[in-house]
Structure formats: structure tokens, C-alpha cells
Length: 305
Image 1 (cartoon, rainbow, N blue to C red):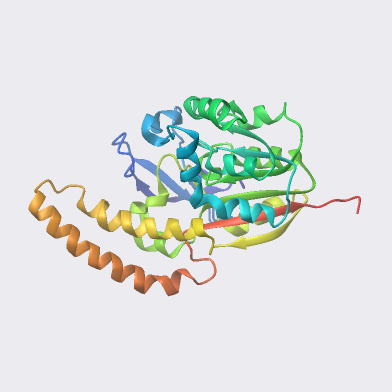
Image 2: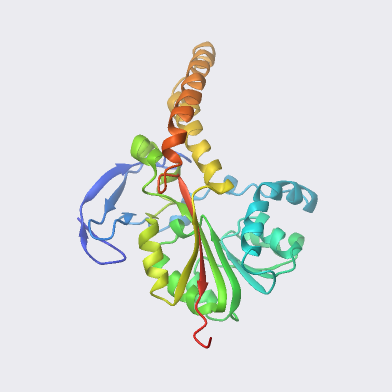
């Protein structure tokens, strides 16, 4: 049993997994699921979680032109933000090398970022031209920052051991009528039910918790926000879903084969199975709540109105 980091209830062991994605360690990680709130979490969280992020984790572009090209697949993010706010101060937490950060700056936002990777911060400051603060403690860092009109976390909240404290602090730092955008992997995904511990987006131990949408919505609404949008049909979710099946069939199922002829044959057969599974799974994954990820937009209620 382990104590749920949100509701503090004793939670039973759900399953065990390993670092199947990066293969940095052969350690086993225990995942627990809280019966009361549905949160899935790792306990204990490794003390030096940064050790599980190799230097190759962030593929930093070599120039601003390369960044522009790499940012094309994230245009949907800035388009989503601009449905609700067109300008103002924007903070991105966990931007990596800054595809969205760059797009937000180009769209006219006054952009700042908090990022744990020092090389990424260097690139953001010197090449992208935004203020990037190198820190793995967003709560402490945000105490010294001015309020924002927009704060975004694109597939970051699941990485944070102190996620609930971060949410509390974020909600304090957003101006009335400002928005909060959170994208994360979905523990209620159909793909997760099928693949279990081998699901690409489980990503132990870097994903320390998987947060159900209703749990996140209830938490943030209790802090004075209203739900503007919940989607599992955005481009990011579709990519997550595609990559989840692809990784399992074309990488996970073949990683132990060294014979090149057998590997080529196996990859061909598994490629056919992968396409068939995607075809059959697509109608199910389009059912509300079954996508591999979600994006939620909240707006802070202006109590003066």
C-alpha cells in the first residue's frame, strides 16, 4: 500500500513496470491506483529523478531555422490558445527547446519559461530570445514572477512529483479572465487498458503520475476556474495514439531480435498487425474519454464582473 499524493488514502499496488522507453536502468517501479480519486502514481519516486533524463532526451535544433521547421507540428497549440486570448504575458512550464515558446513569441505574446534542462534554457535565452529560468522547482520559481494571462503545461504535469503544489501556485499566478492549458496522457485510454505496463506513455519513471480528467477538472475548478474546453481530438492526442501503437508493435516487440533477416521479416509482419490494430481501435479511441491524451483549457473566473 502507498499513500495517494492527492487525497491521502491508502492505495493498493496496481502493477510494476521498468524503464522500457529509455532503458537507463533495470530497476522496477511500483505503480499504485487510488480507489477514491483514481490517480495512478509511482511510489516511491526516485530521489534523483533527473538521472532518468539522458542528454539525448531533448533534441535541440542547431539553428532558429531548424526550430521554425520543427515548430510546424505544434501550430495547433498556439491556434488553440488564441481562441481564448490574443496577447499578454505567457508562461510555459517545461518547454524543452521551445517549439511552442517560439510560436507564442511570434504570435505577439510576452513569453517566459521555466525549464529544468540547462542546455534547453541556453537555447531559449540565446537563440529563441525569451527569458528562460533554469529550475526543477516551479513552485519556488513562480513566487518571484509577475502574474500571467496564459500559463501552459504541454505534457509536463505527469512529470512533476509536486504536481498539486504546482497547480495551486499556477492558479494563484493567473490573472482574472486568464487561461490555463494543460495537456497530459490519459490513464483511462483504451490503449493503456490493452498495453498496460508496456504502454509508451506510461514512461516510467519519468511519468510519476497519471491524472484522470475529472480529477484534474475538479481540482482546478475548486481553485476558482471554469472549464472552457476538454478535447481528445486535437493533433497532439492523435499523434500520441499513433505513436503508442507504433512503438509497441515496431519497437517493443522487436527489441530482443538481433538477426537482421528475422528482424526484417518480423517487422514486416508486425507492421501489418499494427495497421490492422489501428484500423480496428480507431472507432473505440474516438469514444469520449478513450483517447491516449487530453488537452484541457480553463479560464480564471473574474469575481469583479
